[in-house]
Length: 70
Image (cartoon, rainbow, N blue to C red; front, side, top):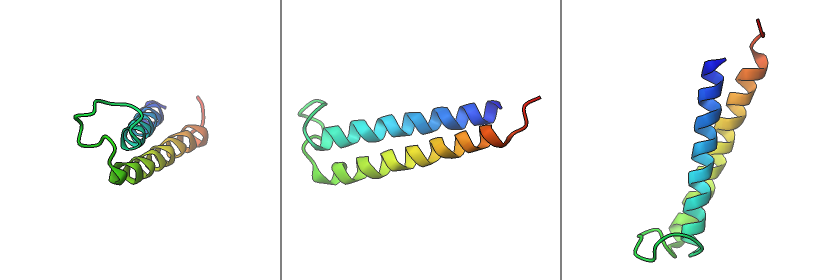
């Protein structure tokens, strides 16, 4: 059960970072001196990172649901 919690936590963290990168690429958050600020490349990167976070999160939830509870 601890492994599932760790994987779920990692998935949430990766998802949050992806959203932050996406918002920085769109000039919504972050300092203007950042290399990611208003950079279209980071819009796409942020989307893929967020999708990866969701996939990791789903994998962690799948592991937690498959394990028999004792």
